[in-house]
Image 1: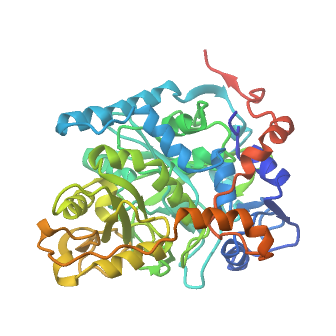
Image 2: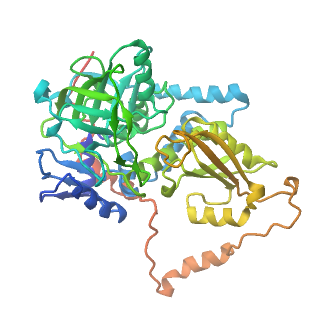
Image 3: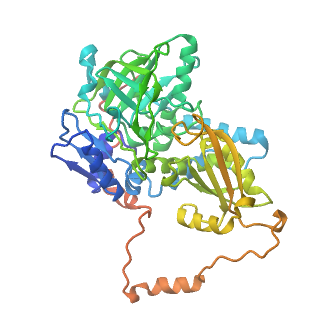
Length: 518
């Protein structure tokens, strides 16, 4: 089973008590953001605003806003199982040598077992608006923060193709509304969409762009996944959901979009056009990203379903909903990190580090200086190379608990001995670096020190209760009459418990609305 679309996901989470419908009128200018802030910080439900000022289209938000929703979105009882699924695909054994690692990475091509499936006719094109009728004012685009330059689309699937190879890229890039027919495309320096833009600029060609809004939750998530350029995000979504993503050609025939998207914006970017000043924008860093120059997207056409739903997300001071999307990425891509760094047991990017500022890494230490080898490896690996601070601890440390990781690290380090500095690429949104997208990095070896590393003093043992006493207290806990609140970040198993009921409630694979190609 796999969710067919956004609507089937909403139906399921509503049945599970994880969706709240808001029927009173709300303002997309700031008011929705403040409501969502309060709900997300209390790990509350997804929200469907049915009466949005200035638009007839309802707004769906906080769709991934806690661990229970994340489990429902990916249809698992533990998000870690997605990483295990990827590990099984590449049949992971620590590969030997550079060529062995490359061959292991190449096994990702087995994702082609669930390639996207083309259809001739699709719900996302039930309504077609051309020319002046294709007006962005129809959409309930949010202005999230008081100093945002304009309303921003924040949960899109921005679809382009490599002008030379035709390989598709789907990215989640924010889009600032300029006027009723124009958006800024925030293609950051290190992103696939920007690479396509630069290639089109060299060729002197306009680049077709489709912006899809709304699909099944895994397909929406895939736009944020840090995949290698040769791996199609829709292919990856099909692998994760266990069913092919159904696609349809855009009206102009130049790109493919999810057949069950709620809304699709068709248009183009002209690389020869002068860039415009985009921003500021209240970003996931918790600060306003400063204005910078980005290209214009020119809207030519809007297609949509009957009675469409507009999905969106609020980012800001962490933790926000985007933390859970980032956490899914962290869990899914652990096996890929382990291809090149097999000593890595686990890693975690806490919300305060907004994904790239802080990475805790637990390793199985085997030789002197091992932690520094891992630190340098991470600083040179894909988008992990944007990491600013990497803290390496021993394998017995639970890096999923930042308080424990910092406690061990701060006890284990001698700053002069255990901290290294280097320089390299930095996230384009980092406002602290001395130069744009380039700055310094810090690596911290917080492992136990060996005599081979020049440490001759005894290393103390960590305090732990004996297993027998812990078992005794577990068995007698009800006798004590002490009630404790549940752990805030405890994984939910509610999806698996309710799965039989939900299977009866919803027919996931109903294809009556699409006409497949032969």
